[in-house]
Image 1: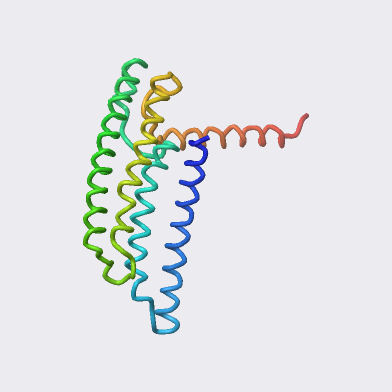
Image 2: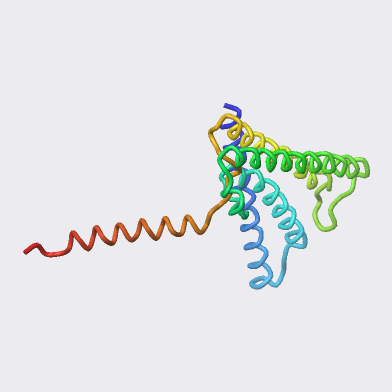
Length: 189
């Protein structure tokens, strides 16, 4: 239940941030080149949106297994050793997330105390920096989910994107389809 809510919220926010960045950049480009004017705050706001997109994207990447990495050496080990290595990776990631949560919270608190605004945008900086502890907490949540799946045997190690394997699988699937269509179109004698 809570996982479904977090999934939908995460995906919705990422889509909204990407749409906002794209729309704001498009409007600003049209205003500059067509109307010889522009939004002074657009670039800074787009940078803030991009930072939010990246920090939300970290946890989403763990969720869908799209982070890249080199695991050729890890795959040489037996499954139990791969699980242990996966748990070490998860623990290191949660430690990193904890540092980001603590450091991000200190940054948010400091900027809230100073009541600083962004240079070009009428946005309080503590609101902009709030993504650091929130994004890191989401990352820790996703890493904890991976750790639980490794402990319960649902997953062997830390899932990474395997672009080479995906390309080979797609090539193999297209070759099978080509073979089927070639066999079906061959006239029978």
